Every structure is written in structure tokens, then in C-alpha cells.
Length: 283
Ligand code: SF4
View 1 (cartoon, rainbow, N blue to C red):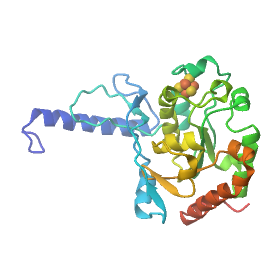
View 2: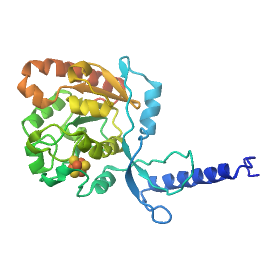
View 3: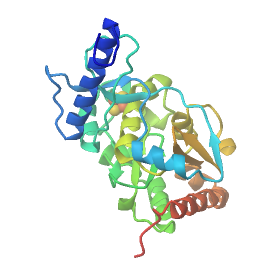
């Protein structure tokens, strides 16, 4: 019989494994990645744990209009402990953006690596309260390696500034890190290969609000399949994180009459950030 009073050897093994995982998590949070025996972090298919502080705060202050949307399991960085204990959930740690970028490397996980010029990882503040997520890089982004730098990027900059932020105050990323040829829509296998890195970026930045730009980003973040017109205008819940879907700036360039709707969405975001006490700083 062990110290917990259990006489089940499997329970004892499970308890020891849990202790090991907890120690490894503390070890990893301390900025050292090598687990005993040389195990390394990896991207694996599993549901990410939301940032603990953000989740706790979300539990304390619920917004007035949040739609609960089921989110399918996604990919997230985990430590592979190589401990085979039945029913023991995988343990996850929060990578920094630099660690996520290092994990991505010169990625060849999907066919888009064959045609890209540069990987477009993301840009902005690693502690941003507000994060924008688009669909995929375009030609300008592919050339520069930076997200949202073409005409649509210029409009996004104006939207961000109208909210009272500078581009460097927020974090901007895409679902895909490589440009689809001819700016075609992302294909499911490409999203499946790449979206785990977006999950890891979101976990690293731990924003208070996500703005999903366009249908592909909104559908990926929320794990659903619905037009942006049916999603925009209200907050959705993504594992305790508020998501505001709105129109993609490229769409707004083609349909400028919809800018009013997009601004309405962003005003809701601004009000929520103010309510959470993380609105833009006076300049
Ligand atoms: S789109 Fe993502 S998964 Fe595909 S090659 Fe680029 S970085 Fe890798």
C-alpha cells in the first residue's frame, strides 16, 4: 500500500507519472527544454490548454454577449514524456513565440512549402491583449515574410489605428504560414498541418480577444463551417477566449460598403477591451 492508501500498482505508476509531468512542466516554464532522457517538445495532435490566467479571468467576468461554439480538438505543442500510462492525459506547456518559431523551422509539413518564397510566421507584441488572425499570406507577404503588408494590410493598419492601437501593440498571424499558389483557398490538409502552430501562437501570446478576419480564419478558430455574415457582429467562445469574427480587409477593399459593419464589430471589441481594463494606452 502506498502513501495515498492505494494498493493498486497501476494507480501508483500513474501517480508517479503525474508527479514527473508536473516536474517537467515546472522545468519547461523555467526556460529549459530538455526533459530527463533528452525528450524534446513537439507538435502533436491534442487539445491545447488555454492560458491559465486568461481562463481564470474569463471565468470571473463573463461578457454580455458570448456565443458558445463547440471547438474541435486541435494541435498544440506538448512534451512527449514517453511514459505509457493508460488514461493519463498528455501534459502541455506554454511555448514562447520564439520556441514556436523554432519548432516550425523551415517547414515542409504540407505541399505549400514547394511554392512559397518565405514563411510568414506572424508579427507584433508577444504580450498583446488583441490578436488578429487572417487566412494565409498573399504575394506581398510571401515576398517580405511579414503578415498583412499589401493593400489589405494597409487597411488593417488603419483599422488598428482607429481602435487606438499601433500595429506593434497587437499580434497578427495567419492560419497558414505559407502562401497558397495564386491565392487560392487553403485546403483541409494544409490547415490540418499548419493550424497547430496558430494554436501555439495564441497560447504563447495569450490575448484577451481574438479578431478573426474572414470566413476561413473564423471557421478554423471556431471549428465550424459557416459564412462570415452569420458569425460576425457578436463574440464567440473558443475555450474561454473571446473571438470576434469580422470581414477580411481584402473583402472590404472589394466591398467598401461593408466597412461600416466591420467598424461596428471592432467597436464591440474596443468596448470589451475597455471593460477588461486592457484598452489602448493614451498616446
Ligand atoms: S503552410 Fe504551414 S504546414 Fe504548410 S509548409 Fe507552410 S508552415 Fe508548413
